[in-house]
Length: 220
Image (cartoon, rainbow, N blue to C red; front, top):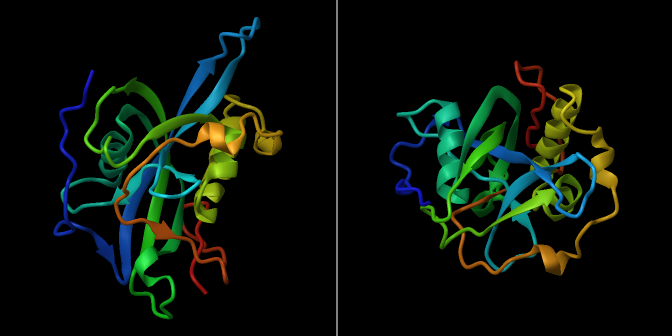
């Protein structure tokens, strides 16, 4: 089965808030039964996508546009970049502020992104999708996902995801993040070509913001 959705291009509909480009993304997840496991246990897995010429992975995310809600933007990015649909938990994992790659050495707020991240339980996975030539996808357990995650702010989102899932009784605690790696890095990575513009986390100075959302980091 393939997705007929075409990926949006350009930034003419991009939302901004003051100096920040608004971004929406999600952590797609599923519960997978190990065929080699004789128990009835299901392992929590998350879906990540590749980027060019790198040995790490990211979660689907991209610009929030002015003709959609933040929830619609997060769902659209998951479908465009990873070829999946699902049930999005509209309670955000948090909001993170980070710099775009092109402006990471700048001292101003120009080029900074404000990213809203959500959890999405995957119900449909397409064999073909809009950006399959740009992004390859891989299901991983939480430990491998944390180890291979490119950005510190996405690792923070993953930690919050595990905390939320644990409180809901859907997985173990954050101990999952520190289990010995299940796969060598070379076995997890896949071939990839190019990636749309990405963002980098600036961790030179961070502080918590008292907002509606429970996670937010700002640039120092």
